[in-house]
Length: 286
Ligand code: SAM
Image (tube, rainbow, N blue to C red):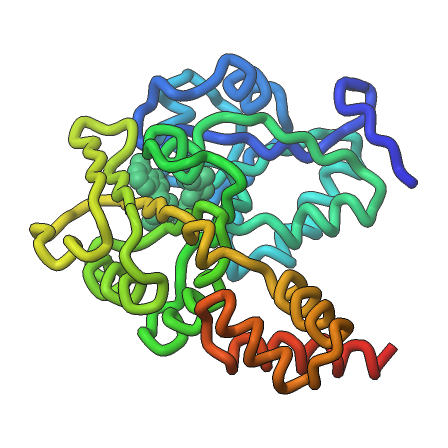
């Protein structure tokens, strides 16, 4: 067990500082203080962060930190922490690590026994979720879906029976194809397109997936919030396995039980079969 006392300022720490997602006024007082106090700000794009630091009169030195130099920079961060100085990590926008680099750095810093402190603020996924009008939780944040349709559909199929609200990041030029794949794999559901949040052209479009092909071309940054499966489609694999087992316990053969559960739940026999087979092979491995 490890216990971190985040406000013990004697100890240096890595601060994960959230920054605005488009509206400079969405910076917190604490974020400004921390960025002013730390030894170095590690930034995904130093030019983008320069605008922010200049706006708030923050003179702290910056270094670049992105997906391709994460491990090298982790060494620099650790060296700084070992010298007794705190550092901050910021991404181009929003909360670091959320569809942004930093996860490996956090692991390295924790492994070396230093504290990691979150300084919360803007985040596109949660901002979209709460304004969407779709049930806010339980939710599942996925981030960016794969760019190729086959791989994207495969991921989406994994959510067919989940009642969780789903949140995705998407680029405007893939939007139409992604919505079409969602319609094909998830059926007709409510979807909310939250575009350019916190910026001058913020727009929130609430529609059904079946209407998606009537959308005009959209530009800017986009979050998609998708309604979870309705109660009659929502189930987990363990629900299915349990149901099949109950029918077997009542005296049916395994195949008959699988057929019966599929019939009762109005789902494909193969879905029940696969869930049951997976469960059995896991049992055999134990
Ligand atoms: N770390 C960020 C966060 O906390 O939200 C997300 C970074 S990710 C690289 C960038 C994606 O987030 C964009 O492509 C878009 O999908 C979403 N995003 C960021 N800012 C947004 C905004 N103002 N409005 C809508 N979506 C936004």
